[in-house]
Image 1 (tube, helix red, strand yellow):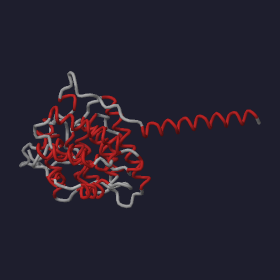
Image 2: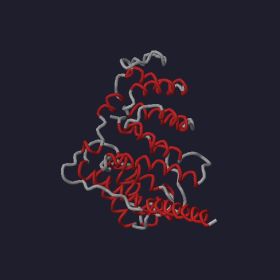
Image 3: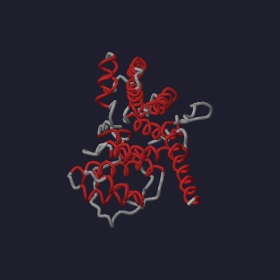
Image 4: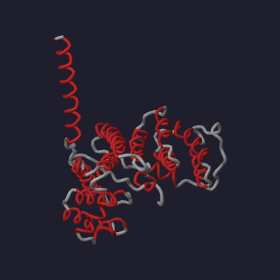
Length: 308
């Protein structure tokens, strides 16, 4: 009997320790790297020259291809045809082609993002993640897996507990990516957005502020080109500060961003708001006391390589 009690006690202590550790990690502040020394824009992983080339290639031919036809030599010709199929509403056919394309080129953002957004449109994010399981786990694949869990947050009828679980899974994947490259900008931004949508009472907003502050710091160091996320960093950081109760600071961030990026509709909408209206806007778009479902466009990265 004593042995049983001892075993149960040990199990209880271990269980408590694991729970305490998880709780500690849940609230523990992130270790955000400084943008000093020999850090370059290359370290941020935001060089999308290849993606822009793929997305803006001559699509006039749009040669009809089947899954069997696609190989490493014609994969770039196959993509315009999948776009044509999507425009025609032939989603299933486009999905099959994209799967083959990604199998050949698992390191191309354009293809993976296209498949993930198509899956989101059809409420088939489960299928997307299953497809990614059998694809080589490149950086691009893992980032899109993390974003797929963000896509789940837009599922109608999903309860708060499930929303939190999906967001936590996304954050866990992003933590791994940041561990490999502490300066990865999109990973910091995605993690910041994840935390931004959590209810204020769960004390995740400060974590959002950490990552989003890093993103704005990166803009101040490297901004100025046409990278469309620079303006969005100011939007998100301002929103996080307002949500956290730091309304003056949040409004100041919006105004600073608007001076740099006056073409940003989101910054234009925010920069002139008073404190009350600023809080109301953030409540409607990011949520305060409960999980707020993000806009469906939040995880679509095609704005990086489109409209160039």
